Image (cartoon, rainbow, N blue to C red; front, side):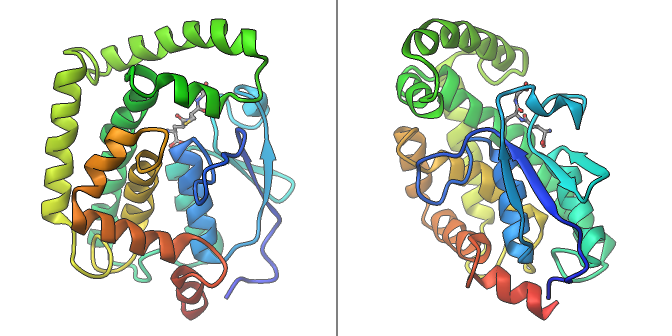
Amino acid sequence: MTSPNLPKLVLCEFDATTIPGLESYSPFCMKAHRALKYLGLPYERRHGLPGTFKKYYSTGQVPVLLIGDSEAVGDSTDILARLQTLTGRTFHGTNDPKLAAEALLWEELADTSLAGFLIASRWADDRNWTRFRNNAFSGLPTLMRGVIMEVVRKRMVRVLVARDVWRAGPEACWRRFQALLDSLEANTPEEGFWLGAFSTADIALFSQLYSLRNEITPWQRDQIIARPRLTRYLDRVDAATRGMGSAGASHSSAA
Ligand SMILES: N[C@@H](CCC(=O)N[C@@H](CS)C(=O)NCC(=O)O)C(=O)O
């Protein structure tokens, strides 16, 4: 049960999306949203452009979680860890160090490898770029959206090349994406969550894969839909983390 003594929580992020169920275009903000909802913690949202929240967290990235008047936590992995100490419970409901360690490994895979494919699907993939730009940056004046975003796109593609996501080009990138989805599909549990008990692995894997499973990136969405166990698993995590009345809300009150 959420303690009435918990401090006020404010999640700093970019603009919200218009896609149902997708709280943010940032998969890392999605992690924070779904973790807060799973735990049944009330929170406020504060939106800003890139760099707005540098005063709270030196990288200038989102998400940043403000806790009460004096604490700011940046980085989604640190936010999830802090939420566990704040509420005095782990997401997986035990103090098993091996489970916590394994959850962190999957969280890292999601935040690095899957995140690379998500960024590539939006910024580098010619099939999706215009649609992504027009949706995610709809608040920008048309001229700025057209010209400045092309400059930002070039920078993002350079980052993807440096990370070896896009270095060998689109065919190699999407072949590796399919191979990774096949490996995930082969490892997806038929029931329950990734490691049996719900854990940070679920929040992290879900946030990247769910961000790919929508109309902004239709080819990547269809690749996920073509893996039925993975698809059913994502639906289970969605149900557990989407908020009021979700399975997560009842898990948190049972903890
Ligand atoms: N490791 C960070 C990554 C956060 C991140 O990459 N945030 C992106 C949005 S998805 C961002 O703020 N980009 C703006 C920038 O890098 O200046 C986390 O887990 O929170």
